[in-house]
Length: 155
Image 1 (tube, rainbow, N blue to C red):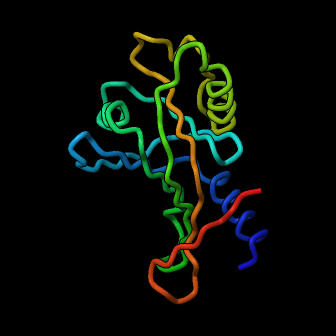
Image 2: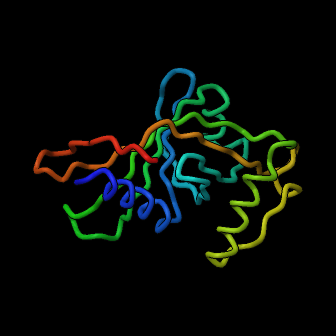
């Protein structure tokens, strides 16, 4: 697959799907996977809202390195394609939420959800805004090799 086709595929998969699978690990390395509704900016920044008390949020607090997968789970067996992304995640500070919560709110409303503001994700609240910054994108090669992933360099 040509790089421009692969780039379009990555962007299309991310835009078409509403949930990502967030893989975290605790301080001892014990893994945990969580599907979260997400918004993105430029396919390199991913935002979601979560309680700071849930497992994936507690894991991020002690080990910010995460794995992200976005894929369509409704396609026929052996036809699926996903985007695999290593990233660094963080709880977004109150004074830095504007950009991320705007993207999250816009996508939420577009999908029939509610509007979100910075007030909804302030310190001390039950829900906070999280961001993962992706450093690379990978897809399945679809070359006949099982689970052979290739990098896609977004321009």
